[in-house]
Amino acid sequence: MTPDKNTREPSSGPAPRNGGRLLVDQLLVHGVTQAFCVPGESYLPVLDALHDVRERLALTVCRQEGGAANMAEAWGKLGGGPGICFVTRGPGATNAAIGVHTAQQDSTPMILFIGQVGSDFVEREAFQEVDYRRMFGGMVKWAASIDRADRIPEMVSHAFHLSTSGRPGPVVLALPEDMLAEVVSVPDALCFSPTQAGPSARQLQQMHQLVADARRPLLLLGGSNWSSAGRAAVRQYAHRFDIPVACAWRFQDSFDNCDSHYVGEVGIGINPRLAERVRQADVIVAVSARLGEMTTSGYSLLEVPLPAQKLVHVYPDPDEIARVYRPALAIVSGADEWAVALESLLPSAQGTADTSGATTDASAGGAGPVERRQWLEGARADYAAWRVPRPQPGSLDYPAIVLHLDSHLPADAILTNGAGNFATPLHRFFRHRRHKTQLAPSSGAMGYGVPAAIAAKLRFPERAVLAFTGDGDFMMTGQELATARQYGAAITVLLVNNGMYGTIRMHQERHFPGRVHGTDLVNPDFVALARAYGCFGERVSSTADFPAAFERATAANGSGQPALLELMVDPEAITTNQTLGEIRQQALGANRNVET
Ligand SMILES: Cc1ncc(C[n+]2csc(CCOP(=O)(O)OP(=O)(O)O)c2C)c(N)n1
Ligand SMILES: [Mg+2]
Image (cartoon, rainbow, N blue to C red; front, top):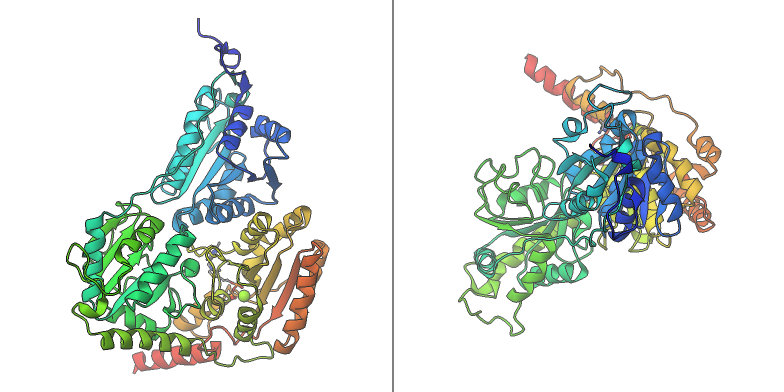
């Protein structure tokens, strides 16, 4: 006779627990202190177990699963383990997909738990049933269903290891309703311990020989897993061998942007002179950067499949290496494992040859010190020139405001953004000094900024957290201001209002000049909306008014109140280089040329 699943006799040993409690206990074992959710009746035993541990494991209830998943993703990006999110069946899971996709593209550890149809109804297309394996299969490192409560410790432990090891990423675990009620007696797992490969001494020497022989080397850094020691080692290496350092798109905080060797971000709206330097470099050491579409300007900065530059690709996942670009040297390694190992290339004795015979002084390699120095200084001058803004049309100059924040915010302030042209001046003019001060989706997902900022503020209540949003972008997850208010996450939202989905309008003008359709927005009164949520709200219409308004917003934050400043931007000010009218005229001119 098969015993009833829900009344399976517990074996002797650990106390009997239902699936919900066992699951929550595993979260505690793995050090989870924060989870995000939108509730569903599909996982009530989990909520009930969370109730008992609410002092140790905080639960933030959100207003839409997209917000919850983005918060969990941002939490995972800030380090210390995967972000944890709970959502209900089909409708909840589909809403949460945006955060899972961002976790995939940004290589962020995250676990999405989904309340699932009971095993008695599964595969009948029961109420709200979705096949999670097929839905998330291409997006996650693992999509599985925990069908037996006694396997919760094993499967949750696997999820923690998988999401944080190698190339980090999201995992989806479905929780069949009846499984959560099942009572079993099994021991807890051990706390997870992620693993990363590191470079071999031989690989490091090969890399170093390429760097030492180079005339125009470039370090290109990405990823969100650098320790202070690793960052210090990279800095020392770059300084010791005169290597310019750039950051991959939206991983701009991988290296101190105020460092004397930093030369800019390789991403959308890249400094054309930096783009030229990437093309002209003879050796590129790309670390923890996927070399995806946005970092390669549409796969144009490096030739496919064999780049003209000697490419050293350091990446934690061998499956990603040579996906598009064949490297001269491939190193399967975590970013920090590689960085810390650089110390072996930094002997205390100045300029001496190491034991393998490779030179440890760039000037003693093939490249002359003067040429290397000029390459670095040229790149630095290009970066400095790129940070001088062109005045914008209208009374509020948004790049000037970003520069104001650049010189006034504390170095540990966290800046978040979603997607839209409003993000470009931020990336161009703001300098990230510390690691994990930028939360920006390389998936280009609108609506990321507000939830990411809430997660950051819950994590670091003492730090300033600013969410940069557009008027379109804000409306995707702006309702999470209610969440910010509920939990006292005193963030400041800077809402750049140009009355349109500006990015798309810009592309529209480029390709179909003058034929505006589907990109105009009639917006709510954002200040009134912010106040309705219980936040501080103020409209800023001129550059000169910004500093005082920002001080008032900061003061509101200081008393625990989230704030929103609506920045009224002239719709013409669509990019830092060109107005909308100039783009249209250019496109019309180009069309005329084609016709003649
Ligand atoms: C979720 C999502 N939907 C659609 C898009 C396509 N998209 C990219 S930018 C953009 C417009 C953004 O408008 P807004 O936030 O007002 O910023 P602006 O470009 O005007 O500065 C759209 C629709 C996207 N990236 N993400
Ligand atoms: Mg807009």
